Image (tube, rainbow, N blue to C red; front, side, top):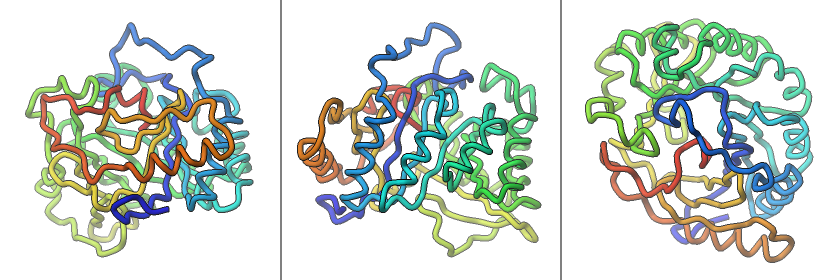
Length: 314
């Protein structure tokens, strides 16, 4: 399906829960998080009904997010249901990896085609400072388990750790066939409260790793690079310093049934309770209304996204 600007919108990011087992500083406070009531969360049946209509409109890719999607019971059941929808060719999940290893066999059997694992450092002390929890070794083990199973892996890093730790994280791509992607900190939710110096452009990674060479391979919103002799890749995603709205191909569905055509807009279309033609028309109208671009993102000034990231879906 095309939006009003002619962009092909074929990618649906579905948040299945706002809950998470970590407390990353740029995403949510350590305590006092107000969770959505259970009755407000879309059922798997609701999600599958919407995904089927999205596929009939030309959708091909679905990514399950949260919060932490693996914190919701029975996620493999949802993956299997998505796999059965004609037209859906990619079903991926974005996770912090803490619960991934034990659930991976069921997810693979259900038809999972890819995984993004959030990891901002390989240093346990820094990991605890960022996430307020422990778990670096568990996450790295989950990465290697996925690779051993033949599942495509992308590691997502918000570069707020010390620069030498970012270099170490990029080194995961040397001997592993994966992509380490650095995504600029965004002034969204608690992230807007970070000091200006925390909003480092992705070009800082290039300064610390001058041996990276640019690749021409398509990387979606990421610019791709490779270290000499490496089997994996390094990606730079720059929502703050470099606008890529012209290539945006996605819409987001929150766990309480609101469709967000743009991450950094407070525009939301409620799809909850709609069925049949009404649901199709509302979804098509939301895609058609996707804005040309979001306003410039300024460190220290909260975007108009309207919710913290765990309430939108990563």
